[in-house]
Image (cartoon, rainbow, N blue to C red; front, top):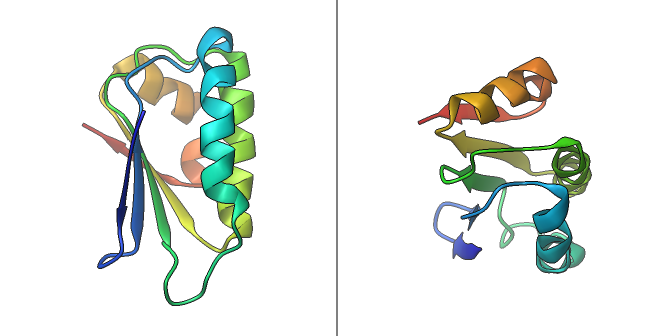
Length: 108
């Protein structure tokens, strides 16, 4: 997992180089939640959370469940979420679950 905060554009990007499955999300969870645990700081905080899933090839039900928790935490901060995905199956999963209605889904 790679993280980058662009304070000039107010964008916090996390790039995942793994699948979002029951075996991987539990390892990612502490780091992701640590980044979201701090309260939003108006004016200095990021307003866009970008999750780069270009290398992700699979998302299972546990991964989706954790993803929804992440989306709720981001929305509570008053921020928007953007997902970048390259794999057609991952893209289709976000469409079928209608998560694309709650975030910006970009197919690479």
